[in-house]
Image (cartoon, helix red, strand yellow):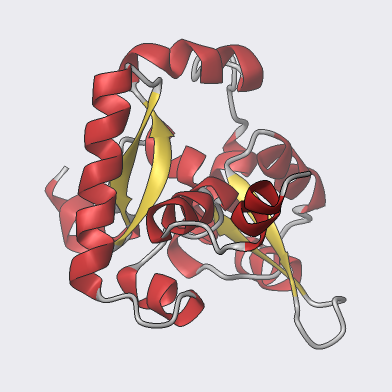
Length: 182
């Protein structure tokens, strides 16, 4: 390896690539605040400029993904014309038929997240382990382990859940007054 290559590999990556890597890692939608915690000196304005620039590049390059707003943050998402790839991997909406029990559990997780299995079962008055496993397998809910000992397990919805139900964020879930109007 030449001295120039060695110096290049030891230099920190450009800020734009660091933000792109944070988006690529996934997890909860990336906010400007969270990015600034990870990258010293990054401002909210710089963050938004980087997001806009990356999206411009992705469009010009014909990439199958873009960065979109989700739950007050940003995440990488497939362009609508590539959603068939997601369906082939996880099954289409029609293929992922949920039992009434699974729908009950999904609703509880969506409205009360993070929620543990015992809370779901107490609210439903029925065993829920198989429905929870099915929803995790379908990518509609995710498992989080407690930070202290890793034994505390809670469930919350995923970006796939939001996408399938065409929600921008959990704030778009119907509320009691919305349901009464139906």
